[in-house]
Image 1 (cartoon, helix red, strand yellow):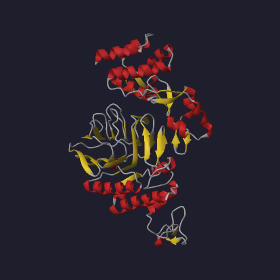
Image 2 (cartoon, rainbow over the protein chains, first blue to last red; image 1 turned 90 degrees about the horizontal axis):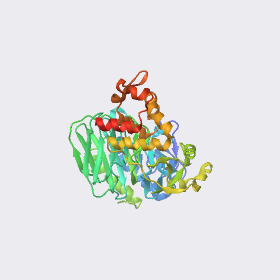
Image 3 (cartoon, rainbow over the protein chains, first blue to last red; image 1 turned 180 degrees about the vertical axis):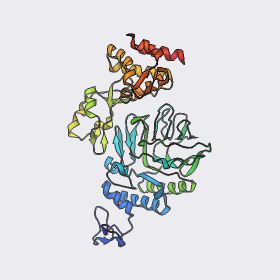
Length: 292
Length: 160
């Protein structure tokens, strides 16, 4: 049944860590301990040795699996703390491949225990995730922002689009622009299908999502911040998604000065999903002692 | 904001190269057309091939603002191209765009603004054979009278 995947190190309750397993012998797969498989694979790929970070990753992965949210997300970047090496991997598929949506970082970025801080001048991360057409009217970006920073007129926190002047077509999120606008764009080829809210605090978990052609929403910390019910079919723009700026026509533009402690990309998330996701992410950040 | 300034040759050496694992240089130009990299790239550089970046001069960097209207777009690309080209090259650039529009388009994001502001349906259009200048403007472009940036601005201002 498990073919070439028949045994694992003992990551169970024996007191060991991934880097220093307990003295119990390696166990058959059927006797895996309490470490989630997504977590184990991620921890090994990213080379995470800190027991608190290992525990937090396991807590995060377990929560996402138990609630079913893991199935709704395609790329999950825990930004657990450390370096570009520990921040590059996708929890959902932690292979060192572009096809696994492993990040590559470019320009000015500060990696620390609190997350990944993009410098607003030339720093960004390429996710290599190009939205397939079946994400039309069914997409989400989630970003955990740690600082209360007001951006400029159009600092893109995550997104991709064809045209910097009007954002058409494309999908992008702006947590806090000048004027205290919080903006999510899920556009058609010719019309800006946007949802806009007002924020005075850029910190917290922001989720920008479209779940139907007449339902675009922004959630902050699990609660609805803004809703748009305008009927407009989204046309995803099939181009790699960047974090820390927008990708337009293959060029990074409209850089954002902001620190993230978690980012995910996936299908649309409803109210229940958002409440669950916030609880999971907030608990994860509390374990890492960096919740806001 | 202070950033580390590069020459064009130094910029070419850094493009698509890593300064640390999973981390690539990303030179960007400022409002005056000079190339820069960030303090983070310099401080975190451990690639022995590029340790010379730690000796780069630290200068004021003014980020180009995304043009908000048609006039700003034309001014922006005009300023950028003038910083890159000699006067003679600049005049030829404006003229040659009609034949090599696609090539220029992908060389710089600022050219994209110019592309948008110039509106291909006004200047001409793309065909299977390339960009064809609108006959109305062909005289100015082909008959030895180079349509300088001022002409482009004049045209756009009078039209819009």
